[in-house]
Length: 115
Image (cartoon, rainbow, N blue to C red; front, side, top):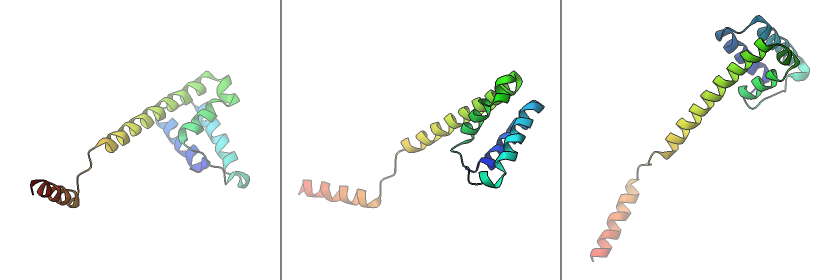
């Protein structure tokens, strides 16, 4: 994931959560840095990783409102990730239907046993 796109998504979610203006200024500042040509190739594994990076910033360390906004978003992201993993595990644990070939071979084996 591109860092700039991730930061835009984070900013949008912070606005939806009613984050303080200081939090939005922090994200905007980091977005400006990420928009520079030297940072164009920067990537991240997840939004959660970006939020944690923002929470470790000096601005968040010095302002509890900013830190709390970021922690709230981090918790939402963790919850949604956990729900996604649960859904994926449920999908994987569903029984896979047998093919026609399986039933044909099963029938042939049973016929051989009877003979």
